Image (cartoon, rainbow, N blue to C red; front, side, top):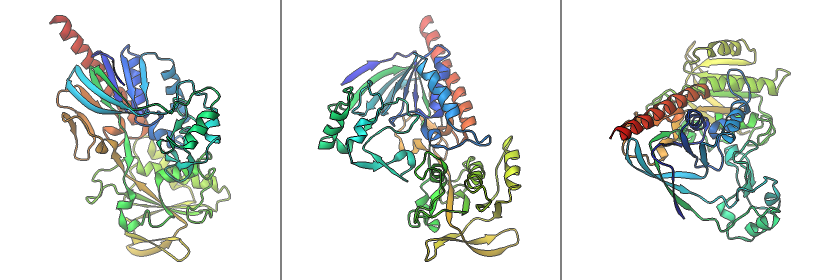
Length: 429
């Protein structure tokens, strides 16, 4: 089905993470009509995967809940999930955009009761848990998902299980005949808030990610620490389910490296400092130990106090070293090899678990952007050659949540100016 929505006084926001939600809301609350598109079944982006923010150690539900409430109460924002931008043509103030909407197989009247999931046995990798757990092929992405509607994975469509899920739905919300849709719209400006993705840790071959089960990423560790995560908040080793009490955190895993990501990803140091606190909370008897292997710690502004508090924690040690390699002993324990540059002595240290603080790579590197989009050497979006499209949040630069929100607000203001100037030009023509 093909439809046409919006006009050149409409603003398009691509990406429904914390930055995209912020940009859409700021523009809408200034009186603009906004279309917010997200390729996943729910809004929230990577912020929704976090257990806690730094430095206050509060839960992401704080910011997300407020934004979701604002979205629900603002009729100027039209949200399209499971939607990707296929093409952008035209010029500043008058873009023609083609969207592709994938079928959810669940209609708006879904009550999120979960009966469809109970009726089937097929499972898929749980994307929300970064593959550390599995979920039913009829699923709600996570407890704060917006829209609060289940999704049927395409893998069961056409099978008996899809029919079982449909039969189990008491409100008739499952539509197995849903098909991909194409939508055309005209917009005056576009904000690309497509976010970031973790650098592929498997490409850092000396660290053994993917070969050694007890070498995980900082994002996976975030899910382990969450009481609603795959282990109920217990810090368990993926290899044997044993408690991990002696944990190594390796900084700049893929960042500041000519062979991987040249840039500093800015959030990694603070993320690891935060995660050492999870270890202390998991083992209040003091038996948990965190060791941070670092080149240098980049904690700026108000984060310096947080860093100093972690330094004073007797359960946390710092080793100034870029780890050279990791091997696995006969018991599946990762053994770190390198040189401590403060004293210049070699080490071969055994840990229960290794957490790689992987760098931020722009998600836009995997998206076909319009030819007029300008990016930096790492692929982060700056703007478009005609000045009508803008990057926001982590799509524009490696940023923490707070700075990503500021970036999104700035992008919304620039986009509004484009629409105003276009309208003024047309009125005098």
